[in-house]
Length: 218
Ligand code: BG6
Ligand code: MG
Image (cartoon, rainbow, N blue to C red):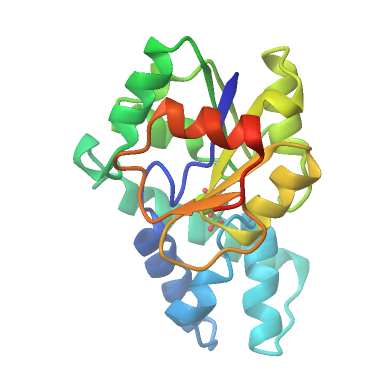
């Protein structure tokens, strides 16, 4: 069995840092950006996120300016990530990883972020995963299933033995398109997942086995 975790919003809340970084770039370039729009960027690649912000503001820029904005956004975001510590790991994550390890499950990260490795190292979690697949390894971002299929392939697992944990609708769709069981995490309502937990606190391996074996809709 393989548990594949999205990173941002499932393992750690980096939302606020993405929000601050995008807001400063948007405002510098005469565009508006708010928290509602920030939610729409969950699971979406950096480039596609900027395209969503441009469309929202009905603006277009030359490719050179777009590349400059992407670089600046990431520079600001990486600066903010300096504040991350293991205390930013979301509730229940360490405990669930521990019980998956005891039960002999494989564990992977399937993230759209190109900063995934740096974030996991800052959290002290990098070595807890059997593989990390992120925005540097894929050509198509969620809702395309590539990131999850690549994780399963790297660990020689069939998709029907994989459970994906996701906080974004695009990620739930990606998991389903990969033929995997999709578990929603977080407060935002997610459609089409087998079950949604507000946090991973108290989630056990037995809960997961029940989902996967029965394909239960709770
Ligand atoms: C995802 C986040 O994990 O990574 C998105 O949910 C973000 O909000 C995407 O845009 C890309 O992240 P990065 O770190 O490569 O800019
Ligand atoms: Mg996410």
